[in-house]
Image (tube, rainbow over all chains, first blue to last red; front, top):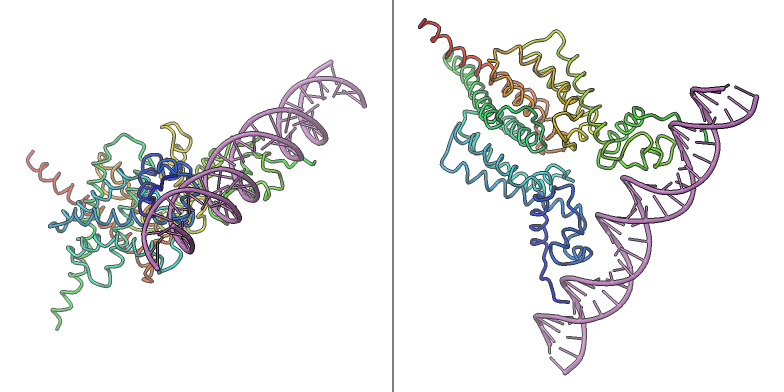
Length: 202
Length: 202
DNA sequence: CCCGGCGGCTAACTGCATTAACTAAAAGCT
DNA sequence: AGCTTTTAGTTAATGCAGTTAGCCGCCGGG
């Protein structure tokens, strides 16, 4: 029996690829082993169990998505950056549905869960995007959560085939970006309008 | 063996309840049967298989969520209606996590899938909310998709424990509503500003 | 050259969905 | 009422997926 030279990273990579092809929920230890030219029990020498595998796929997906978004917003700001980030996330979800599904399936066990850290890295770029808007520091968390919700929701619905009518999805995406961009600007304007008059009273 | 008087509707109701308690992914035919005081194979006299069960739970959830949102927006309009609808959805997700997860798990088979119809009924109320904003008809679909994405995303992230920092989630929710409200108004304003001057040229 | 550990294997167990074949309660017909 | 037909439930059995246990050969270090 020739050594297969396996290793946790290669297993996770193969699993992610397979999940993208056949769907995350159809991902089975047997199929994964087969693809790696090995028997199923051998996988347990490198990963604890299926749940562990799922978590690792999710962590990988967070890192990859974060990297993709990060490069997409290079040299952009404001609405441009927002559109680029959202587009990158959308592309990621469309080209890697299995990995994306993995990120949805995991429930972090605690605040120091590696998944959490990877997730945080994944969202980092969105924080950079928001820095291009005039957002008061105390609202930053809310804004970040909002942006995250928005694109997460869109990607999610699209990935799960939730859009039924034939109206162009790309147009809807542009509309959504416009909505968020305008919303962020409007809030920023309202805040500065509320702050400026107070200055005049000094 | 006394007849248990089962029936698809009671089975689905019990399954939804059980899913809310133990989690959708932990829902098993055996446990469901046990709760109903019956053996597992008996369930197959009323439902085709587990996938069928999942779809029915999802359909039930769509209907219930739609009804809850519908009553929540009674007599409200504009930002009020938006907040009420979003709050109702959020409450539903928090009180019925199992049912909500069911809606995420199903992939509609076609445009005439009963799931699709239930889903359409479920989002109906959001259409009513949008009617309170000045949205040009050709943008209605986009706006509906956007609103759906936004609150779907927020509910989803909250349900899966995606929010890590301790900043108040209710506040983030208010912020999100504000963002969407302002975004919708801003787009409507821009559209009427673009349309009105054209009128003056007549 | 030997040997210890590591990585992979086979065999076996478990839990779950599902099917087949059977039985008895209910509902209808005469 | 008695007979029949349907049907909701039963037990038994199948198959598959995840996982564990225990074996054994390959490889690197003394």
